Amino acid sequence: MVFSTPIFMFYFLALTLLVYYVTPRRGRNLVLLISSLFFYWWGERVYVAIMFLSTAIDYTHGLLVERCKAKGNDRGAKLAVASSIVFNLALLCFFKYWDFIAGSLQSIGLTFIPVLGIHLPIGISFYTFQTMSYTIDVYRGDARAQRSILNFGTFVTLFPQLIAGPIIKYKDLGDQINERTCSTEKFASGVQILMVGLAKKLLIANNVGMLWDTYKAMAPGELTVAGAWLGVLAFTFQIYFDFSGYSDMAVGLGRMLGFEFLPNFNYPYISRSITEFWRRWHISLSTWFREYLYIPLGGNRCSKPRWMLNLLIVWAATGIWHGASWNFLLWGLYFFALLMVEKFFLLKPLERAPALAGHVYTMFFVMVSWAIFGLENFGQLAAYLKVMFGLGGVPLADLSFFYHLISYLPILCVAAAASTPLGRAAYRSMGKKTQYAACALLVAAGLVICTAYLVDGTYNPFLYSNF
Image (cartoon, rainbow, N blue to C red; front, side, top):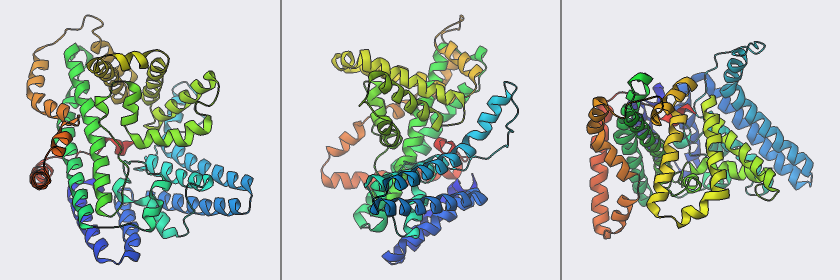
């Protein structure tokens, strides 16, 4: 995408921050709204109209919900919420799933739905969920309806997290949209977090991603057991550092503008169970589904069969949210099955087991899940999994495996260490002066190295911008 190229991002961010801070506080939301719309328009052009439409629909629905609630018309408020949800889901389903459904039907000989070749608008999975949360929060009384269309538009289009999240609920950001505090300390900490995210993306994710691309492109006959696992290990690190890197950049940019976004990752690869993993991975998405789908379905306040059905629906939705492909649905159902096994049999034994055993168990199944996630073609996926588990007389390793292992071992070791809180623990053990000096040195070094990568490297978009 042209609008995400490094040179554009640098100038766009610098100009936005300059104009934002020289503008009086009352005008800063207008600056953000114009900047965010320009940011989106630069890459999507005509699709910015969808964002205008989504903003207008949900803004008016929020006011309608509050008006109905004030008059004691709960039925009218529910209808308004339902109307908002239907609109947002219809918008998402049309652009994201129409061609998928049409193509699936045509593959079995049903041609009554044409394939339209629809381009997926960037970030639509994120901003439709955010706007849906608004009317629901107003109905529940968790937030007041936003009277200013300018302020609401700022919430919907806020550029730091517009492309790939985290998903921000209105009740968590509404007050900050109306009033927020900017300070030198907050700006400086935002720069630090931004640089951490940038380093995750450029220095780790992009580099290990090249190893995954190599193995993903291999024919099944060229793969070995060790090589297939090495490729999946690379993708395991790539998707974490790519997505958590974007989330860190969003949090850092938000803080530079005076906002506080909730963290989206909490070292998921140190988990000792799949249950714990999903408390630490993509926190904003799992929280959204829990609050706006799982609990409204009845949560666990129902019979065991109904509770299992609720979880099945949530995990099917979680899978298909990630993309219009059967492998994503399979990925969601895979985690549903694992979580069911844990809830009924494994959680207590895992709590008593040595920590290392829990980590090995979790990472084994997480890595298998990333193979399902990363390979959309079922034939390729089946062949790759077959090699991973050594079926069909596949060789254990070859010279190619050892070449790639030795070549990528340094970056894999860095990725493994950076997946743990060891660095944070070391930082917190320092004195204040040492912390300041270390931060200044690391930010400066990170800026120089990342700039060198940006200048010398090719454009490599964020993985989650596809979802």
